[in-house]
Image 1 (cartoon, rainbow, N blue to C red):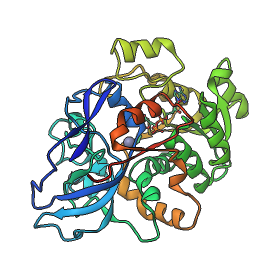
Image 2: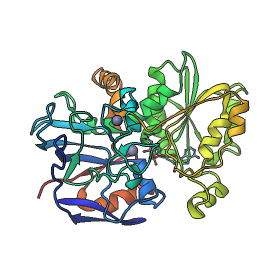
Image 3: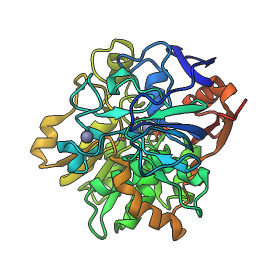
Image 4: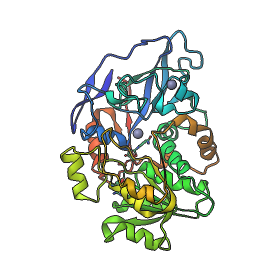
Length: 382
Ligand SMILES: NC(=O)c1ccc[n+]([C@@H]2O[C@H](COP(=O)([O-])OP(=O)(O)OC[C@H]3O[C@@H](n4cnc5c(N)ncnc54)[C@H](O)[C@@H]3O)[C@@H](O)[C@H]2O)c1
Ligand SMILES: [Zn+2]
Ligand SMILES: [Zn+2]
């Protein structure tokens, strides 16, 4: 089969790989019909994620058709059209039993903090991902769901990560009716967080980024006010002025470790690797939220420490909430919103590439060229 393969930072190829096999009775093999590139893939692409091995296939947002099932699989059959959450999880351990699917204790021998994620380096278990014609899906009775007939592949695929994550980010922001919510980052995750904050009762939503085309989408799609941080002297002061001097009730970090906006933080993280990513967006969040407010962190950070303004968070009495999204927990409510026409996930897909052009797809999405918000990848069949 054809699969995207990592050859080193900024170097991707499409190669022939063996089609995955059933390795365990609870496995399924899924023929991928549509995959996407997530902002998280960029951390791998840029060589920021530890233990990203040569030959690894990325891709943790994908939908497809069940091609083969192991002998113990009961809920799926060959031919089912399925959406697969980005989490690999067992469904039965202490953490899964509490809905903490992204923290499953049984699927990742390489780390105790995070569970398994498809196509996301050996730090998250080393599972090959869905930017390929086929993918092995462990615990096939647990994660995947059959896609309802009324939902297209293009609307289902962002539900396997970006849209569920944006929604989760808004949930963790503890929004109370009338709250002012600031969202940092206008990528697919931030745009969905902004849109979802209204569902939770926000009175005002403000999105911050430095890419005008994405801020435009935040205004038209997420009905948010916007701030371009490169056009104001001090973004925290600016946000404070916009929020009566006190700060926002909640700030959602949808940027993560590769934030722009502070050269020193960038150099110490991306270049010198002295910290596990630039915490500049997180520090803006801590500074821009009001005392007693909530910071929700969806942006991804590496396992190493980062220079986070923890003392300020402590002294302001903040609540900090965060996790990799337990995707399937979000689906029942999200599917209701999508069905009711309140949210159309495919609105985020601005570009589509054949798998053969995956290197170009990463380049366009990574460099935010051509108005790209999210890039889809079609593996096709030989
Ligand atoms: N928690 C999870 O489960 C989960 C799931 C998906 C993605 N993520 C993470 O969420 C983050 C966003 O994902 P995405 O797909 O939307 O990525 P993206 O790269 O498309 O979007 C990030 C946006 O942040 C903007 N940005 C950069 N520096 C900024 C700053 N200092 N302040 C405000 N905006 C800034 C960029 O211009 C860009 O538009 C990534 O870190 C990704 O790894 C986490
Ligand atoms: Zn992702
Ligand atoms: Zn588990």
